[in-house]
Image 1 (tube, rainbow, N blue to C red):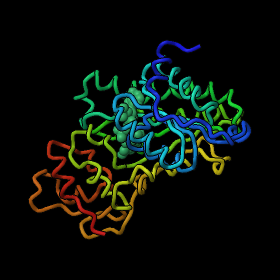
Image 2: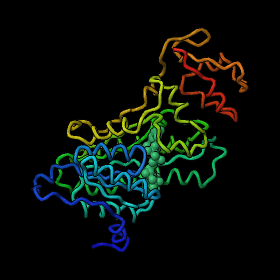
Image 3: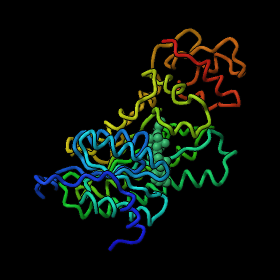
Image 4: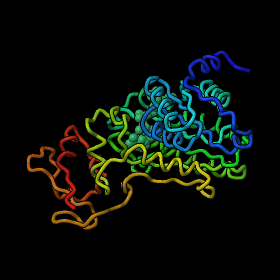
Length: 337
Ligand SMILES: NC(=O)c1ccc[n+]([C@@H]2O[C@H](COP(=O)([O-])OP(=O)(O)OC[C@H]3O[C@@H](n4cnc5c(N)ncnc54)[C@H](OP(=O)(O)O)[C@@H]3O)[C@@H](O)[C@H]2O)c1
C-alpha cells in the first residue's frame, strides 16, 4: 500500500520510459535495474550515464538540486537507459523506505544499489568543528548510508535477479585521515569500509556481493564545500598521475563492480585515486628525502615551512600541517619529476 509520502514521490517522478512491449518477463529479470543515491550530480550522475549507455534502468536519487536531477534523467534516457528522479533525503528512515518502494514500483525488482550520496564541510581542524557540522557529516555519510544499505539488503534478498550487488562510494580519506581538513569525513568513510567488509560476509551466502570504490581527488562540486578555491586541481595535480580524476573514471569502476564480470568479487575496495595511496613515487631530487615526491618551494613562500621539511613528507601530506597560509603553501609545491 502506498503511503502519502510515497504518492508524493510518485508525483515527483518524471521522464519515465515504460518497458518496451517486446521485452518478456524473463528478459526483464536479467536486465540491470539500479538505484543510485546522490545520482543527480558528480560521481552518481556519471555512474548513471554509464548505466544508461548499457540500457539499464536507473533511479536517480537527490535531495535538493532538482534541475541537476532532471538533466541526469534526460541524459540517461538519451544514452539508451530508463530513468526516474527520486527526491528523498537519505538521512530520514521513512524517506529511504519510500525511495526504494518508489523505485521498484516503476522499474520492478532491483538488481543493484549504489550508495554514493555524501557530503563534506569546511576545511578545518577538529577543534574548530561545530556540533551541527559533525552531525550533518555523520548523519549523511554514515547513518544515511547504513539506512540505505539496510533497505538494499532487505530488498535484494527477496529479489529474483541473478546478479545482485551493492556498491558503496567510500574515499581514500579513510586511509589518509584528512587531518586539519575533514577528520569527520575521513572517519565516516572508514565506517563505510568496515560496513563493506561486514555486509559482504552477511550477504555473500545469499548471493549478494558488496564492494566499494575509494575515489581520490575527483573533479566534482563537493570540493566547493571545503572553502578552498581550486582544491581539486591543486591536490589532484600532486597525485602520481599528476591530475585530478574525472567522475566517469570512478563510475567505470562502479559499473564493473555491479556487472556480472565481477561475479567473484565481494568485500573488496577499489582505489580510483591516481595512485594517491602509494607510499612514494617518482625519483628523489636534490634536497628531498629518498623515495618521497620531489618538491620545490617558491622563494616568496611565507609559510615558514622550510624546504627540507616540506621535501621530507609524502606528496599528499602537506595538508597535514595546514595553517592559515595553507593555500599559498600548496601553491608553491611543485612536482619536479
Ligand atoms: N569528489 C571527490 O573528490 C570524492 C572523493 C572521494 C569520495 N567521494 C565521494 O563520492 C560521493 C559522491 O560525491 P561527489 O563528489 O559526486 O559529490 P557531489 O557532486 O557534491 O554530489 C553529491 C550528491 O549527493 C546528494 N546528496 C547529498 N546529501 C544527500 C541526502 N541527504 N539525501 C540524498 N542525496 C544527497 C546530492 O544531492 P543534491 O544534488 O540534491 O544536492 C548530490 O546528488 C560522496 O560519497 C563522496 O564522499 C568524492
